[in-house]
Structures are given as structure tokens and as C-alpha cells.
Image 1: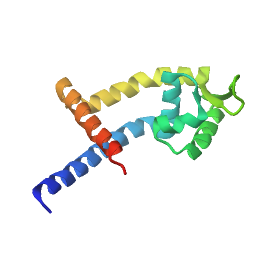
Image 2 (image 1 turned 180 degrees about the vertical axis):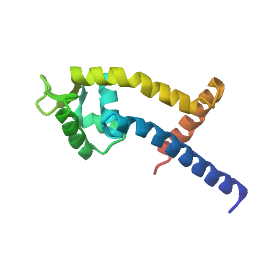
Image 3 (image 1 turned 90 degrees about the horizontal axis):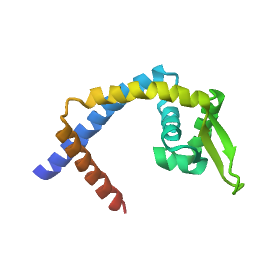
Image 4 (image 1 turned 90 degrees about the vertical axis):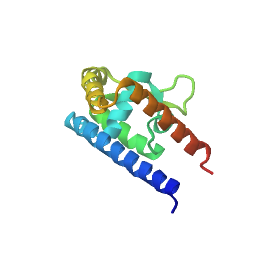
Length: 147
């Protein structure tokens, strides 16, 4: 293995460990709210983007489409989300945040955002911007070269 390959492996390992550390810390806070990270992701999506077709939620939060029904069922039982039929297309069902879900996420999200800010505050604003640009570049390159 050459030096450049070693550097690539090191980057992959460091990136994976950093993501795991951040994710675990954020997920503890989410679990303490009574939701799991996937339920939270769906609720957050609906809070920020409004009602969404069930068929499109998976792609927006990186979840297999088969799991969406299960997650929305759980959120419905908690009265945080409801399903609504499309008025124009009978094949489409929307997930929509309820008033209870809205109140929950509205009270929870500011602390969630603050927690994430505190976790990444080791980086100054310029470093954050640079990290975002480099990670976007990496991600887009991987997507482009999947085949």
C-alpha cells in the first residue's frame, strides 16, 4: 500500500469515528425524548418541510421505504403524526405533523440544535465552512462514481 492509499484509509477511519461520536451523543438526547432517531428524523422533516408523501420520506431521511410505514405507525400511535389522503391522487398518502407533534418538536428542537452546536464548537466558523465544502465534495464524488 502506498502513502496516498494509507492517507485515504486514515481519512475514512477518522471520518467514521467522528461521525459515530457525534451521532451517539445526539442520539442519547433523542432517545431521552421518547423517540428513536428515525422517528425524530421523520418528525423533523415534517416540521421543517410540511406534509410529505409517504413514498418520498425515505429518500429524504435516508431510510428504506419499507421502514417508513412502520415508523409512521409508531408516530401515529404517539399522536405526533397523522396520515392524510391526497385530494388529487388516490394512490398518494401524506404524513403530516399533528398539533401535538408540532408542539413537541418546537420545544425540543432548539435544545437539539444547541447540543449539535456545542458538539462542533471546537471548530471555528471558517473551519466549519471548510469541512462542509470538503465533505460535500467527497460525497458528491462518491455519488457520481457509484457505478
